[in-house]
Image 1 (cartoon, rainbow, N blue to C red):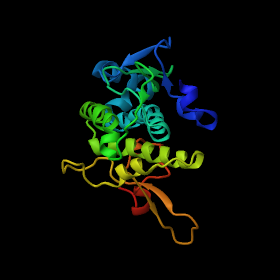
Image 2: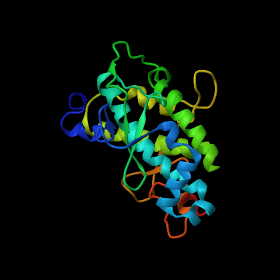
Image 3: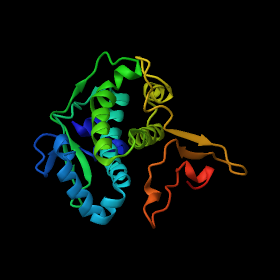
Length: 239
């Protein structure tokens, strides 16, 4: 199934998906977010002292690996094939690398073609945004004592990166996904947490604008770690 959805150069989008029967160790999403287990992994990866002093930073960085595994294949399958992958958190499992970081998501089944995929971006991506990302971010933000918009910024960064990569590899319409990123508000009037996660800022004397995240991921707060190249703080100066 994965070879059919992601042939040739698109195989990169299958790298973080696993199907039923995969024998690699995996955790449910609930177990991934269970406080004691999460703290144990964060402490093992980053060190207990850093967990104590910079919990919010570590949680932000950890979230990136989940988003990196989940978002690209979901967007690619939907936009290229109108293919609906099953994303309910209680049905997904997360494969961890030896370092304890999320490496792939294991689906309960291969999903199905969506013959009447809606044009409305909030309907099309409701299972991803409302069904999966929102509860994941709410739970992780509360445990990490980090503002949810920081984690949404991480998710939006991978969302936009995926669209740029798809534009390089295919001629498929990416309009529904870009429409989601361009909407300030959800249909119910609440703020869209994925609005404009990335902007392109003209630079004096440069041929290309600078890609810039709207929200900083906080990584620079750890001593010895530099700002990421897309950090918004680099343009307006240090905090």
